[in-house]
Length: 273
Image (tube, rainbow, N blue to C red; front, side, top):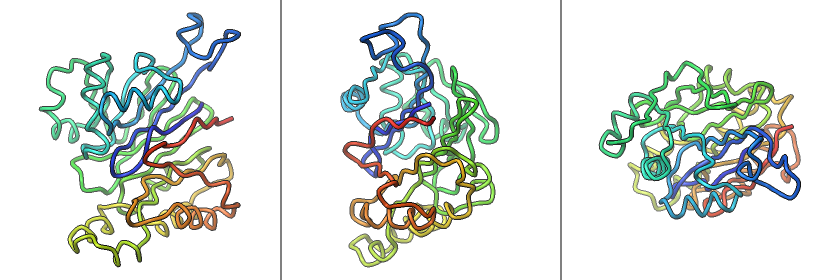
């Protein structure tokens, strides 16, 4: 199993997860080059325009027609604004909660392959098992996901204002984690955001700060952890150095071992062995 980010931050988010053979034929690198190979590609969220999404996928060596489907965490524009257009253009199925769909009825009108998911029930897309779990965030029915190929687990947690026992139980023991480090509290509170926005971002239904994310990480079983990525960093209210430092202290590793998902480039493919 491998995963990569198209971009992460308030201007757009999307994560790509793949299971299967990367290059079974000599001299080729895509599944379309070898009809006998099988690979599942699942996109989590799409907050980018259609042209930008196609370009970001191409950077990872994937074309939209290789996608097996899109799973959606919630209805905020930086996660969902590009989903309907991408699904409509390439005839892709979309999985999302009832609350998210209800909030996006106009955007998804006319799409025939919409699947409502139970936030507490796992489902499969091709060779990838996907476990949704609810999170505290100011959206209609937000979830995050754990992806598995049956042997390895990738946990994703962004867009939540605080942790819960269920979140930590779900993420414990993962082989890879993409974890929100949205803001540094001092930078947020001393910055130029209006007070109401500071309260929203830093509140229980907003976004995790560096120390909150580190606290979650410290309470997890990380004995199998191969990859740790800090994600959804605020450009105004955080720095990669602060986020990495907090997570590295929590897990007891060198700072260089912790990756960062950036807004412009996301991060390149990472393999879970």
